[in-house]
Amino acid sequence: MAKRIEPNRKSVKDILENLLAGHREAAFNGPETALKFLRRTFEGQGSLPNAVKAAAYDLSAEAQAQSGQWEDCVASVDLALGYLPDLEAAFPHDYRRMLEGMTCFERGIQAHSELGNFHGALGLCDRAIALDLGAHYAAKRDSLEWAR
Image 1 (cartoon, one colour):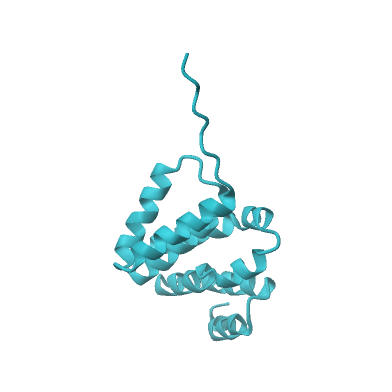
Image 2: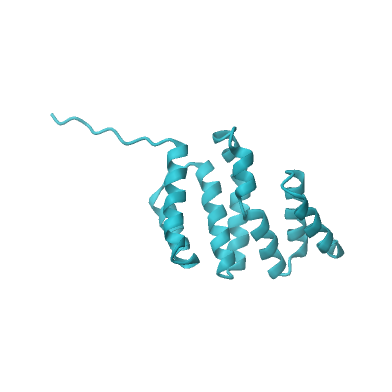
């Protein structure tokens, strides 16, 4: 009787590192290639950990913004932000550093502004300010204050 081969169980950290390395390599060929890599990752990984999804959607939002895909960018930003609690739970010691390295707030504000949804942009500014992500979000909020 043949022995059953046990599945390879990678840690969330290992999966995230693999995602980031693959994305870095794909991004050298432009945002479309990066998006293609991320799409294939989502399709091929039926059980991608939610913490990794936060990073993957953040990377998607960045590439979509670079490609001018504003509606898709907003959707990716919303998904990335929805997975932040999972990112914090999986990486409690690195969460702050990881959060500060994410571009989803910047790209979400840009995408909402490009789409004329200034209230959405203001909401992201407020959320970034609440997370203490930097004074530049207060400046962005102040520049959009007319939309209130």
